[in-house]
Length: 451
Ligand code: URA
Image (cartoon, rainbow, N blue to C red; front, side, top):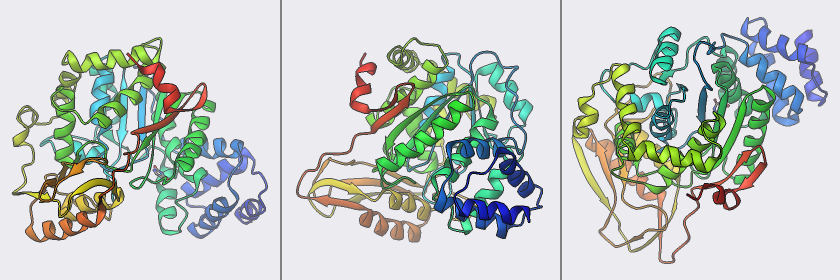
């Protein structure tokens, strides 16, 4: 009867108490509440939402449904970054060593890719030998010793979210703001960092298609983080085109290494890393302003310290360093083919989610959790939004291990790229941030970042 009453209450938009929300989550984890009743409750949340107080209690109940990481043995402010997911998003691979090179402990529990979005764990696993399933002790010892560790999420971290997410996935209840915010924040809170930076992506390759939705989600999440006692910032970044040039697991590692070595530079990618990283460094009180934080981060690239830290991470987690020092050895593909433009004009739009599907079709992603992936495949864009292109000029270079898959992926690629005679301004790479000053547009904040 208890669960029936809670569903009824939510259906009528009445506020649930903290005790009711904890009983709901704990009952579900213990399998005392069946999926059909939880589904009804989730659907009621989709229509009626949650009050701020309910959202915080619901999130805390999920965070406390399993083990929370105890980071107290690690000295200093511990920091963590979360991205809501996108295509070509390799910011963690760049940002984490930059921040750790400044002596700030970087706690990174990452996920695998699903659908068109990639995952940091899959990218790192393209490095032969690299272990991504660290025990809690290994993880904490490594962070204490070298200030950085990247591991896949343990089964005991926020188990309520794992169960709820699987249920939401099959009951059309994924796209509810409070459910997304509580799902993400429960895992972040359980992972224990003091400072959180949330990278909320918006655009054709993101969960949140509009800026308005992205800002709203960012506000919900920062509010939960702050009320839970964590320093929390959110940055709204663009996903109307892949971030950087590379899409595909090993290719993205190669691009990240290039940036860390200061050799190549996709401007949007480096700038995103600097902005997200500045808030981590500033939040950890290692700098007195985001501007000073940005300067310190830039120096980790020019001094080579960020790249050294990346090598240290790879070596410590058992990865083959030869493949990083000579990137040609890292997951080579058997077919490398340029894809050229059929017309002249300007690149005016990408269906970015579709570009993620192109990489998936080549074998670089998964549609089901159990699917295995080919680290070598993907593509390297040669043109980004706003670039002029001539007929016959390369739009991208494809890396494949199957001719058949390559042909199908190329077809889908052409459908995802729009070339027009008229130039159209490319989108900004970020739109704004939520800080202690509330939401501010990028134009206002950029002044704080000019070196
Ligand atoms: N990522 C999550 O972890 N949870 C959601 O609900 C959506 C995206």
